[in-house]
Length: 444
Image (cartoon, rainbow, N blue to C red; front, side, top):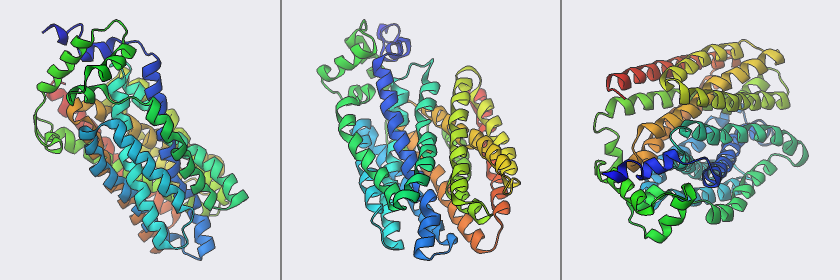
């Protein structure tokens, strides 16, 4: 069938130059990821100050960290699959409204119960946004650049966390902790009209739902002005007609995908456990070890900045080398870097180096794993595959902060707590290397 060759939908997208459409999708999703990172991380930056103002022990924030991550998990499990039915753009708009509005309401919290409720609902919005901006960026990216584009886009998350740390220090000193959530809520709400008018819907979704040609044609022409719209649509319909039907979550375990899905889930669970344990508890642990709050926040910002660098470097490597080798090695290296961070004590230069290298491995490789997951699953279940992998990972993200709070209350030292994170980092490495072996044996 000719359309599946030169003129087919995938061929058009893959041969297209990186033009204004691809740049616009990547840039808008990057901004959403930045705001997601800012709002996800904000509670960790303000927790020591809230604890001081409300007369709470630092360990009391374990449930607060965990409830926000539970919201992320609920959002990833529930609203992400909805995008395969209602559209990526629709769910992105709804999720951005949710996390912006409830981040703003968090600024007016006066009790732990209110903080728990607002952080949970904020997390639902954050959790639904991320898988869909990954899927949308992946779908508009040519195959030769796909991993790089998804990786660069997702760099917005740790960059937002990094900027959040730097800005939060100033905001807390100038207007107190409430101002951090005001900024984190107002910015997503201001972005909504921009997304409504400028962010395109997934063209693959439009074809799958039988949208009229007048909605599809302008997008196709922006991808490649010389492409035949009819052949583009025919190509994507052929791809989608050959995809297995049924409830999309079940499709993650069909056609030989069971070991792939399970190993991805192990890697996500373990690495997000480490990642969210570090980004949530590091400011509190380092302050408890004797560093001023501003320096404790700086160390966490450096960890996220290391993740940005790691993501860019690893993303380019993934496009050129086996992603399983690259990511497996990065997770293994992160275990050693976390040990360096643990033994840094209050030596600021060692802490900053350890934080940067830990972020390079933990955050950078996680972003690469997001891109890998988007590439592993076919279009019909891509948002579901990414969403459920992130959802399972966020169960680990919930476990990490909760265990940290329990062990801190039990008298564990900051060094021992950080050192404990080496174990799940090593398990993530083993899972990715094993996944590579499974894919090679399957001839993929």
